[in-house]
Amino acid sequence: MKKKGQVELSCQSKLNQKQVANELLDKTVEDCNKHLASKVAVLECMLELDNLLIKNSLCKKKHLYNNP
Image 1 (cartoon, one colour):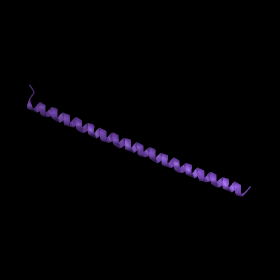
Image 2: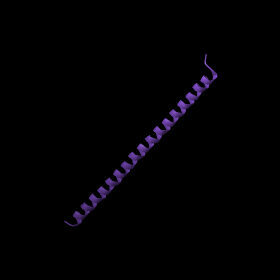
Image 3: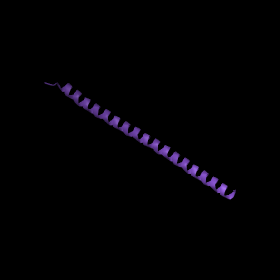
Image 4: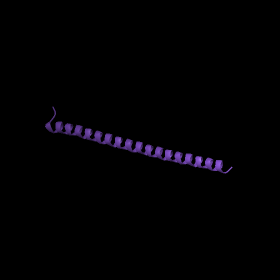
C-alpha cells in the first residue's frame, strides 16, 4: 500500500518529466530554427555572390564588345 507522500512524489516526478520534456522540445525547436536561419543566410549570400558574378561577367562582355 502506497503512502500519501509516495503518491505526491510520483505525481511531482511526472510533472518534472513533463517539464523537462517541454523544455527539451522548446530547445530542439529553437536549435532547428537557428539552423534553418543559418542556411537561409548562407543561401542569400550565395545568391548575392552569384548576382555579382553575373553582373561582372556582363560588364566584361560589354567592355570587350565595345573595345574589340
